[in-house]
Amino acid sequence: MGEIIKGKPVADKMTDDLTAEVAALNAKGITPKLTIVRVGARPDDLAYEKGALSKCQKVGLATEVKELPLDITQDDFIAELRKINNDSNVHGILIFRPLPKQLSEEVIKYEIAPEKDIDCFSPVNAAKLLEGDKSGFPPCTPTAVIEILKYYNVPMEGKKAVVLGRSMVVGKPATLLLLNENATVTICHSRTKDLPKVVSEADIVVAGIGKAKMVKADFIKEGAVVMDVGINLDENGNLCGDVDTEACVEKASLITPVPGGVGSVTTSILAKHVIKACKALNNL
Figure (cartoon, rainbow, N blue to C red):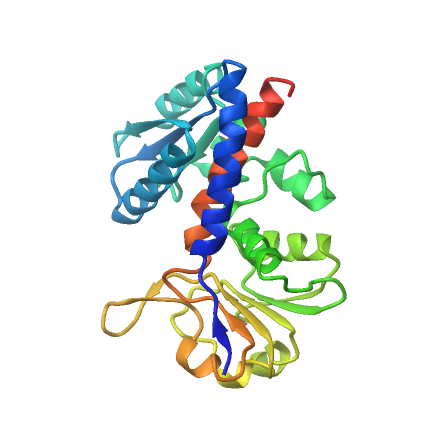
């Protein structure tokens, strides 16, 4: 029987560290600030926003939410974004995606200032992640996965890791971050043949494929570490991950739950990135 490992102890440790960093910046007369750009009011955006604002305020960051109308034109959106880019009091920008259909993410991702882009929307930060350039900002969710693995002393070097999913939000960046830790990584996706067999060879499994409870016990090697990044609703309308936790915990050594796992660390990474951006923008 494996151990279900929560994100809260990781987030609490990070909160203490980040609060101390903000206090040191305050002593220099600097207050790190996050601006959230939200178009409309989707329930999932509002839920994440609430958690992000709470975490930022807890560690002492200044915050602001720019709520833009659902029917905003692309030109008007870009004009608003440029104002935030140019505001020297703002150090981190988070744009909630997906954006409405009239707004092209392919265009807008080139408009956000890379040095303030704390969740890897800009191609500049995606390229830095690919190159292993630590001055960039990887996406917050896969970074939270690595933070949890380190907190629970899970060795990554030389281990076989399988990442389920190839999105730019989780799959690809998680793969690159695991490579940076010297793991040997396989990416699986909807076209992977004999998926359970491939996943069952992994020492570390990161599930971010977006299908409720898809990962069953036969996917998991005895003693593997399972990181569930999925956020889905089950047949009863309850929040669940991509992993069938009850079935897999019998074989895994460590497994993160949903809710209460990776997601609870993501907002701490967001705050950490705002502080990192603030330091860089102030040449500290």
